[in-house]
Length: 150
Image 1 (cartoon, rainbow, N blue to C red):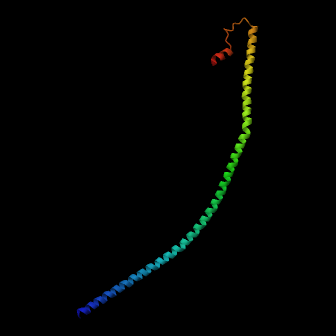
Image 2 (cartoon, rainbow, N blue to C red; image 1 turned 180 degrees about the horizontal axis):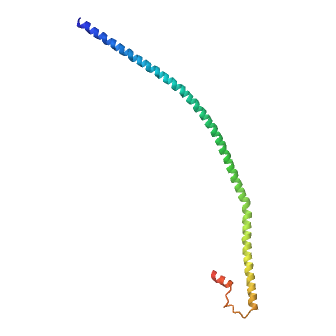
Image 3 (spheres, rainbow, N blue to C red; image 1 turned 180 degrees about the vertical axis):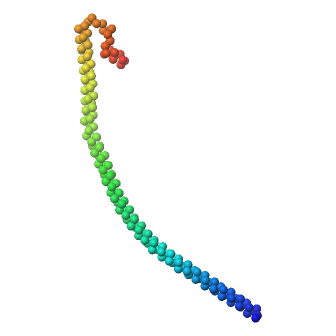
């Protein structure tokens, strides 16, 4: 056997080993590709189911938001109506209440003035009837009150 034949056998053996290695690698790559294809199909079916469920949830949420929007609109209308009613009630009640309070205040002032004038007249009549009392000695409630207010 010559060196050329020996080199040819080594090259042939290396080619066979490389071919076997490539066949095994391609077979593993083919198996991995098949599993990847199966996984992609599973993801596609689950993704489609998830998107379908998501669309249903979005539709339900949209319907619920429409209901909430309707409730908020009605609450806004009710608030506006209550505010308008309150304003009109205030306008309707304000004048009579103010006038009633003014009349009550004026009446109480007039009553006090009348009572004070009546007390003064009674005191003057009592002093005229009893001239022997010294008015400087006896201090009446009237003069005490006047001195306290000064």
